[in-house]
Length: 352
View 1 (tube, rainbow, N blue to C red):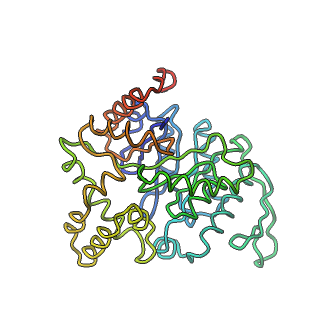
View 2: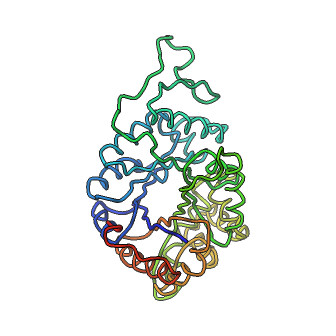
View 3: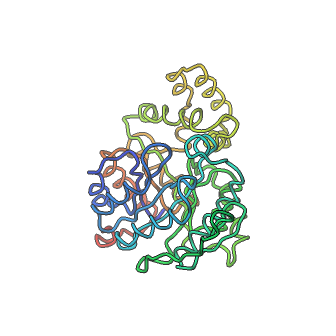
């Protein structure tokens, strides 16, 4: 059963922090691509809340050196009283090469080294790394570089690291080397496939699956008088992910949705995109596709979907992607779904 309710704060205003915490959201998550960064909004939210965890979902690895990401996380963790979770992701070649000016090469190795360096930094080790991607101290240069230990002494040494992953090898890597997986375009109907990919990684991990490994999909939520009306709110965004949020031939969002059995609609969305037909792109998103990866419809229908589909899957936390106005409504629906499935009702203290 999904134990924790979270929200994506990427599109929410500064006044949403208090609303979310009061409604019982356990954590808030940011994202970044080529707009807002992931750490600044969390600092703002952290100053306005008391108990919510603060997660990057995700911080892009190409945007910062691993030591820089570790510094940002440790700084915010110290300021917030130990509430930070670092979600990492590599993005795709369009952003990595076009925005950050780095070659998109050896993504799995890149991730392994990045996580290792961050963990060494958190642990206050002298950071020395000689890998395929990173060399600390750098080879060449003046020759004066030296291994350095962070000067932050009062942050946690075990800040959790999660991985945003959509491809099969990357999902397995999340299970092998990190503390949690942040899926996008997650569908509970594909649960068996996700579990298989995670199990591959857990078998490689010393000690197997850790007790508190978290699976926290970001899930669009739209309420409406009927399913079609609610789905209409989400079609343009889903169409954008399929057609425009990645390079042709290497669009991980496209792959994750097509894999669910929607390859033909995805192809049509691409064709409409190439023809600059934005309305046609959205219209080409079938309602079945929306319902596969989102929660849509009247509140009672959304509650029923949670009870019959979502609470039976591998997810442990649900990160709701919805409006500020919907936050209290969805929190109520989520709590009712858990109660209907026999979960204990948390005390007011546990809700913050």
